[in-house]
Amino acid sequence: MPLKPPSKGAVTSDVHTRPTTTPDGHTSPAQTPPRTDFGPATAMPSRSSSAPGGSALTLDADAPSSTPTVAVRQTPSSSSTATKADQRPWADYLSNAPIRLLRPAEAPGLWTLKGRRYAEVPDGVVQVGEDPLTGQLRAKLASQLNPKGPVLVWDPDVDLWHPLEESGSPILRSNRRKSSVETPLSDDEFEMALEFLPDRSQTVDDVFEMASESMPIQPYTAQELSFMRQEVRYTSLSNQRGSYNRANNGKYPLRDSLGRPVRIRTLQNKVTFDSGETYTSEQIKPYIKFEGYETVARLYEEKLQLRQFTEADVRVPGERALIGQSMVVANRRIAKGEVVGVYGGTIRSGRFLLPAEQVFSMTIGMDVVLRSGQLGPGPIAVVGDNIISRLNTHFIYDDTGKPLRQAPDGYNINLIGFKVEADLPNSDGVTRKTYLLNSAFALEDIPAGTELRWNYNYSDEDIGLLFS
Image 1: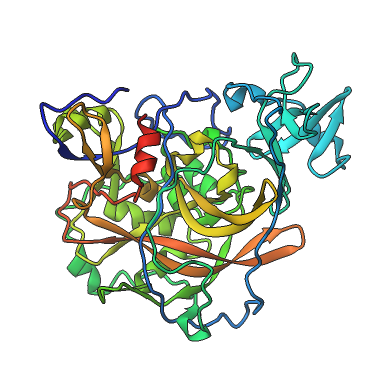
Image 2: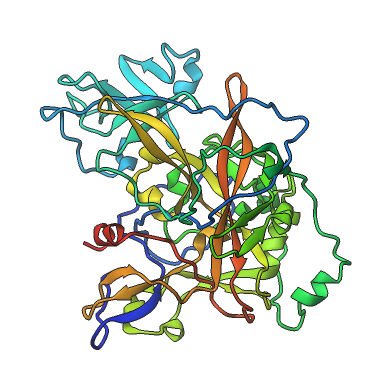
């Protein structure tokens, strides 16, 4: 949907930025509950959060004390003479071949059926072949003699092949945290990630909640309750722009590509900015309750509501592009400093993200990878699927209605990254990893019905790429 120009001059406006791409047309898994769809899918980059200096924690007594593992993986180098990938939708390469009936595999994640070779990927199965010029494994169509699909890279963390984007670094949302996630913290900067749910009789509810302001909460269906408890394999096809499944609010906030919880074991006590502003993690704990399911999901729905963006919500001409898309509003009055949730979804290496996956992706850490023989950093992202990932942002437009840059102000939510140590499942058990848990705090008192916006922290270069 083209962005329509404002009447004149540079205009500051809130916008839900999403780069356009064509959806692949696949339906979500059979057991996925009904979702709300607000219009055609378009692709957009990912996000990140903001939290500077770190502070206190206490290690979990049951948690391994080893240093978080850094995975180094070889990325096949590309050649100027290498096969150029077709510009086909990724969904065109997905196959219904019943390879899982053929276990064990001939090699990690690879099977041969009727003379054709197949690889297991997060979205299912693709036929593959070797690029005759580079030897790289590529996805292919049955009609192709030589493969022309995306290069595939093996990810030992989840025992799956991933399509490798060849267009450069992903565009991710971020919190612009000043301290790197790899910076070592002393033991007293962590505490056990004690998981508890609030006592509903506490007076804090009387302070934060006014029943007369809140909207009724629809009961969860049996299908939604079942979905919250399932370990559903990740697929980008079920998390396109315009989709939303409220049952995801009841899933654990960090999950691997197989849908298994990446359980948080230690949690940073507080984050302090250079300005002296401090955020503590106490309010976050109810949202990381293991197997909290509908009890956790209800915490989100008591405070937040997702609805369609309408003509009445347009503030300046540039926002007309948002009509028909989604927006998140306060379901009741939210007090300044109150936590409204955490950015939850599936953990993915940034280098494996397809453009369509970057719509809801946010930085949660860094990895070390090999690119063209060079060791360097690569982002780790969480592909968001809960209601926090659906919050909109705010741009400055030029006089043609094209976004120029991320607006410096105009937000009522701030995402703060708290360092956590979490157990990433693998074939040998679990590996202790360090991530940022991006948590949403209210910057001001927010009346019921008011839209929530936060700063995606896109660079000017990101904006240029998104809206070129």
